[in-house]
Image (cartoon, rainbow, N blue to C red):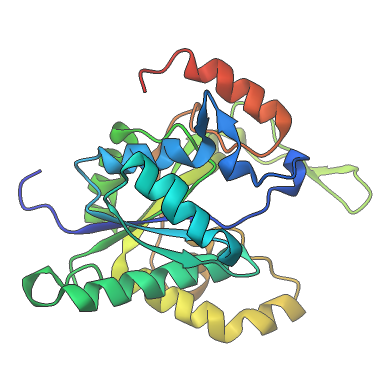
Length: 256
């Protein structure tokens, strides 16, 4: 890419994955003899889009991750491994602070991960089918629109239900997307939005407002619109034992 702006990935791997019904955190469970997190990190490592990576994991796993994931598999773009927080948004914020610190440390002309022309790619570590094509589409979109998220139009009819499970509304499927990662933003924009979230999160909790992804943070605390970009129907998040079975089958069709 000519004149490419600096791109920092924040990969989230701090969750415990209770729905996986395993004593091992899902991101470290083996998928075709490699830890699940390996696949997202590998896509980032070989990408022409991403320049460096902040890996967010649980505090107790940092030493393990540095030795048995980052060093063992040669993920040289992973410059920092930091502890996550209680909620997903806490982990993202910790990653953003680490990315800002890395940018300041680089200094000079390279100090652009949080300058006016850097981008932050936020990626779930439990999505093993990230591709270079998705990363490039997101890069092109964030250049134009400042904020974007990978996703795909839904295939099924969606029902909105009431508290006891009765269908209340059927939204038009033509306007419904399932949102994935990466979600990508101008670096100063996403840091500003997350700093606002940190200031307001107690109020949001009291009002019953749940922040479930990074796009929602930008939508809630800025006036920037978030572009939806084509990801892939294969770009699944592994959450349950059944998902691992599906991922195993999908890997048989991938050239990784």
